[in-house]
Image 1: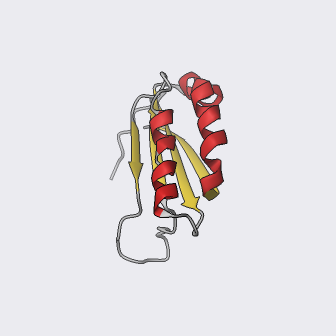
Image 2: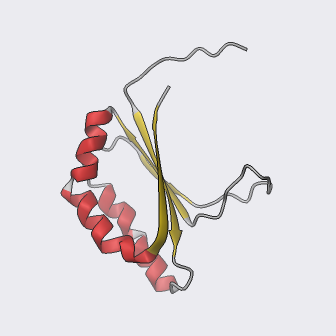
Image 3: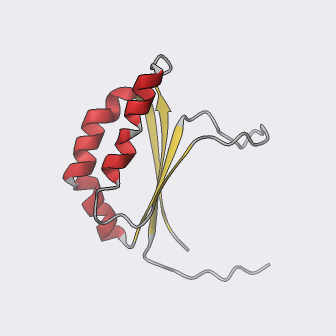
Length: 110
């Protein structure tokens, strides 16, 4: 099978969050405000939030995270603006108290 790959400048920013296990329901609800703050950054294309799916347990599947974030950007410059934007910086400062671990994967969309 041959893949017909079209190069784009779009970037997919994927972030996995592991929230602290001792958070109250109220604290988890407060954490969700993090995503609302990020939506305000003007260079974001799309923003989607998820939680682990209950798919088959296999060695290659990691569904240990609590929340996932998927953000698209039209290009690398828009991503870079997002990283330094006051809404992003302030949201990380305000909400990072809720997580133990964060993993980021950035990909060029093909």
